[in-house]
Length: 139
Image 1 (tube, helix red, strand yellow):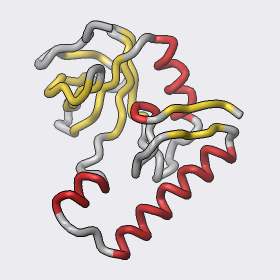
Image 2 (cartoon, helix red, strand yellow):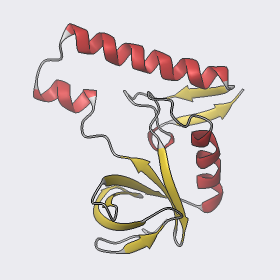
Image 3 (cartoon, helix red, strand yellow):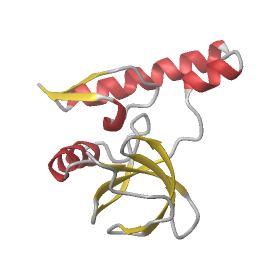
Image 4 (cartoon, helix red, strand yellow):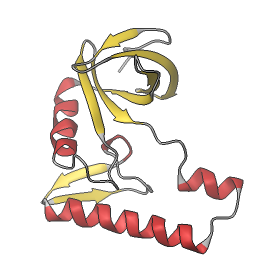
């Protein structure tokens, strides 16, 4: 799928307007809101995004799961919270404390518990569960 966004492009979501800043992965971009908050835009075929949006809406406010902020249709995209760091990057930069390891493990287990309680199975390796970097299946 050819990229549907470009750096500097302005896209309109339901709740806000976003300025595309940087390409992070094939169809994943960093962007900023009108209030200069950093977010992640994920582009994909609309049918796939509808499924991810429906899953993420079930977990609104569930801290261990990356939150859906907004979405747009031209081109189809989801707006997700941007994490400033992750455990993998942090561990390569400095040693992670035992306390932080316990916190990360509890967060992952809590997210998995939330997913399983709603009949969703997650497969993948991540310290913050997100459809963008995970495979999902309904039980």
